[in-house]
Image 1 (tube, one colour):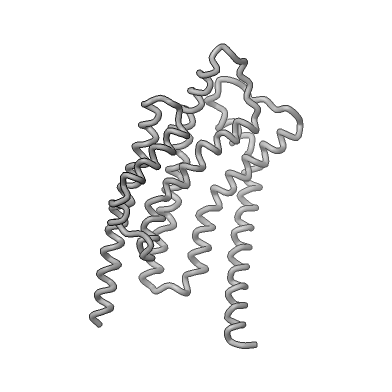
Image 2 (tube, one colour):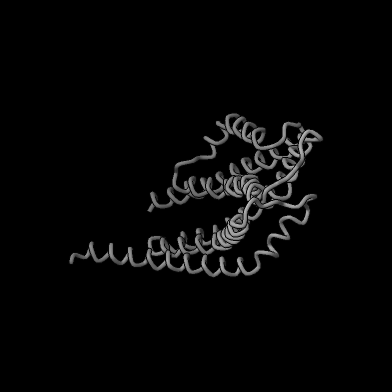
Length: 243
């Protein structure tokens, strides 16, 4: 067996190890979440003015598994990021290891911030608008699975969007994105943000503004962070050229 083949097998073995750790963590978190699924359910529905409905006995199991699965995935995310970092660590320099390690707590913070913004700001706005839209025309009755699917649609996209600053920093370090390009295309980015915000928020000015402003702020923060990373990248490249 050649050295190249042995090296590939070592990488595959290391990858398998990381995947097994992630799966083990997910299973542990899933079991723990399932044990406390009733308390998790009660927390999510405590502010609802009406009881949720199930259409069959299997819906109860489905909701329990969905809740436990979502909580387990959320708790596993930092472990996933850390295991990815450990997998690529041997290929990084000491400086790159230190820099990329800082991305882990930052990505977790932004993920939680996005979830919180979606759950505490966007979800009540959209839900109250839709309930008010029905008014006295309909008898409101939410099924449990439909309600939690709605909650996920109102929260998960923001947890991803809030990762924008880190993604921009990473792409800038690779030379794919530059702050100048982001500044030049700012008006197109703002237009895209406005369109997305209007589509996911109720059709009233206040709700639109409450969604648009944080996303624009994230874009501006991304430009600042991209500028910092880009300057350091250029400075480092010049130092290497002078050696």
